[in-house]
Length: 183
Length: 296
Image (tube, rainbow over all chains, first blue to last red; front, side):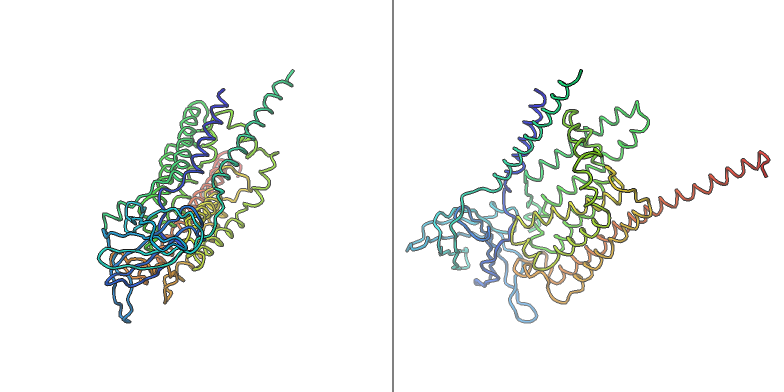
């Protein structure tokens, strides 16, 4: 009975460890917009995963002051916080924007960035527009591939639990056999 | 802005659960060994009082490096990323290994689980032990550590880690594991599968790791252009430019990064000197005793 409890506890911990997804992405990802000037701001946009597939897509937006360096080139300065940012999404072959996603600090692990998760059901080229309060709009495209619905992390986790349980069972059987064979 | 930085914690169960599990198992094992130590003269050394805080300090450093603003800001500042690598690969592993974790954690496991795991991992007849012994030779571990250190600081690999959370996690895991395996030999922690290196051998191993860290740090610190272009597209914090940040990051890797190995090398050489110093005394004492007895 104690053995069962130990095995159950280990299995639970393994499942929790393996399947527990990070609460938020760290920022970063595949660059979609790099240092685009939008009024007096500089905007960069990244997405995850790579390649983008139907399902959940993560977007990260960095907003900073535009600073002119010694060579006259505009580059990102201090981060700009507390701006309202929204992502407008238009599905392939659609004529109007179907969804508006707020991109916020609350969804981000790094509170200097703006992030959001959204679901994309249809593969194809999606038209996106990033609306930044008081600065303007930035259009860009996202090519979404038809993704497999297999969750490899979950499959790996379950496989690991099965292997551990199998090993524990075999050890248990060996022990009971050795006890039975004792004179 | 500083308040936003300080609020950038990330509580990831995938990191918190293993850290707590290891901490609890170590504490249980340490307490068991302390209790047993009252009856067995040899065991208190394995569960010396200082090992528990040292082990927990190592775990806290891992948690800080992966969950605190150090981790989240690593995406905006290269120097912060180097601080993170320093904690993960240079500070936490020696602390954890100095606490001799494997034997103590084994004592933290329930008896019925400990025996089969011990039989698989430590028994001389087990199939795993000779393989582990062969592939974790000190020279191989030093080589693997250097390859991973240099490999992950290559600009394309580094940028790939910043593009994908999965690659970033793999980067940190490999840094940590290779560092733990190298410090396993330097600290002489259990289980002792390999031929004992001795103080000088371990000191040589620690000192041999210094040039690798130094070369990488110097190359980064003295580069004339930004190596990691990812940082050119992110907001600049506290007015630190991309180049200043890169130089600072290189210096962190170079100086404190090499320092831990140097420190370990010096401590080991010191220990060797102490042991060697004792030897002639014993010999002289014997001679003097023999002289007293009228042998000469």
